[in-house]
Image (tube, rainbow, N blue to C red; front, side, top):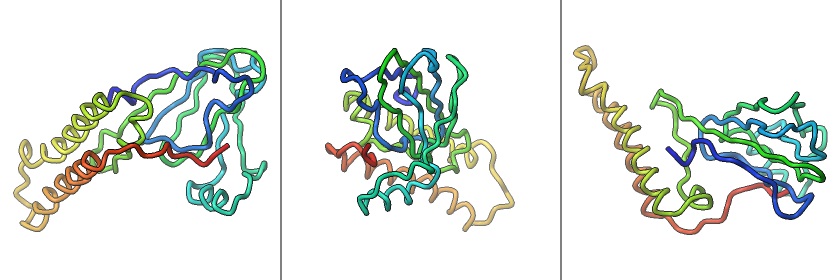
Length: 197
């Protein structure tokens, strides 16, 4: 999806304000690469939570702050260094910049193996791009995923698989299409998902 390809993150207008809140991304794999030198900036650290999404949600539901010993801020040696992560599983944030300039580039990927679950959340993507753009890109992305599931049946017929096995192959494509259709039909203005500061 073009939406998930390279985009730049700049500083918030208010000095010291966090670049973003604790969150997970809406895709399978992405990286954050530092364009500016993180060692010439006060603040602006990339941080991740040493725990699961569910643990973070439970902490926040109880109104508890994130324990400092569970916040990891990897040291970035300089510009051009990156953090690669499973976007939908790693809770992370970027701290506010007190002094200097912080620019990062984020690029997202989806697995070639279409059997891996898709994490695109169209209701979240519309917070970053125009709705019509998101709809067109998402529909194309999901159609390509489903086509890749069906290509095996079309291009490489397997004469060993029984009827139940073939039905399961077709069902997987249908279930993914049904999920995409449901997301498109329920598209509204949902709040941006995050776990707060």
